[in-house]
Image (tube, one colour):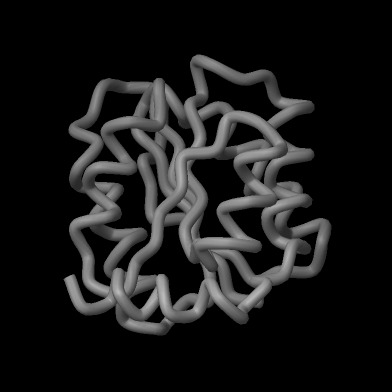
Length: 143
């Protein structure tokens, strides 16, 4: 699967770990930045990842900032992007099963690396339930 990943300075360290995990799982990963822990403006990197998902170039995207809130706000402004802030496993499962989330957002200052890796694994392997949820996704697409 083609995955695009990005972060701001607060998520840089966790992004590096998640990128390595994705590559070890056999995914093709594009790193949209940021390149270090030097302070940056998160919308720049959120836009790069969300536009890659919105265009269909990437099947999934992952964004990491300090809390996950800013990146969520950026990503969900793009048509066709269903970004889910998941700092626990249950949210990761439901974001895929019920919402068919195509972009995962995590708070690098809120969760540890072990939990983040488990969230990523869970999120990538959980399938969309479809059924009654398809109509709801269609309603989101109409907004």
